[in-house]
Length: 599
Image (tube, rainbow, N blue to C red):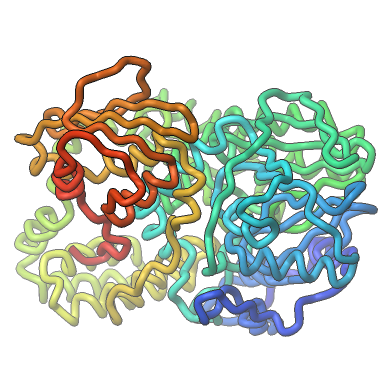
């Protein structure tokens, strides 16, 4: 396989403003393991490999570049020490931290690298641009849990941070192990990156709630002497997101709304489907509002772009791509095509397709088009034959029976693979494995197909999914390395903490149970009513005095301790305290390592 075409513009921009690297690039975790190892991507210094498409190799080389960089006077970024960037803006009395990475260990290392080269400046504020874990999870690496510095975020940040990382957290983190390739080795036959960045770190994960909400476009805040003008962009890359201009520094931050890759309309780990129509319009609004005032545009991933003309060109390409994806998908949907049919043949305009920043390294045209279709009409394609299909294992046993058994199906897998029809070979191989999960030949046949699909993928997340599938078929399920922690729980509201209980009630087990609890929180003055009724745990704030089976007076910390230990030591309780034991006895425990490639 030949090396990627020579185009040094992005490489020059990625290294512009270089100050220092973290040497060595290994960041230990607080538990004694490795939180992140930037040096593990040194293999990308080679010219290429037969197991990686040249275009993806090029993107991975770019995202693996790491160190401290000056964006412009007063604005610095640490890149390549996590999947995301940490931006540092020097202020009157210290430094403002934007998006403190995934883990406290990598965030602390990034801040340490900055301080070693720019002085031991205190953190005077933290800004989260949006509620994805790689933009807030490392906050406890840059400030203490009891910090008094302002923490600034877009309106509804906490709602969506908890929804993704706690409510659906187990499923999303498990699925995220596939698209990140977290358990694969680093190298040409394993992980070469994620397209958006090298890979997510695996250290301590936390959250501090915002103390200042940004609620409208044009809102101006002076934070420790630095002027910010914010642009609200809800429903784009995240349900709550914001860009901002630093008008006195002529610098524009596009958060994660404009990066050097085609992004996801629906990420493979799962999330709410994003609105590509509004995504395009918010980029257009940013061009209109800020482009004449910006000499550099930077983001929470990848490298900056300098120069007004280049900024407008870059943002226009991104704007037009999301608009085109949306409009052409909807047009063809209204002509009767379903999502998979539209995605199968969806060319971009040649001028857009030729741009590196529009290539599908992280998102892809294929799964973005299907997501737009899903946003409008959902999973059902209106064909009644698809309305009530069997689930995977039941479907697999029937297909395998039709084909003459598992051995015959595996032979067909190899036949289609030899013909180069890897997509159908994978489908047949999955049926064989689901019909007989103990069949070693079926698992190896499917794993071999996944290898080939992975090595041929330009999209890094598709590659990681295929190669992780191959690894699990051969070696079994590896543990999920990251999930919500007790630090997340401390940041949650009372309603959100109660949600963590209601979401884990085993409905069938609770059908015949019925009880009520009154909650009184002395630290906040809030009162809540909780009822178990018809298998559902209902809870809501109240101003009424309801008679209850159990009456509890405590603090939020007391609730965390009660949930964690079941002890009433720091709780004032009246009535039947066995109600709590009855409630906790109805709770299920999520499985962070549930099976995906086998039943």
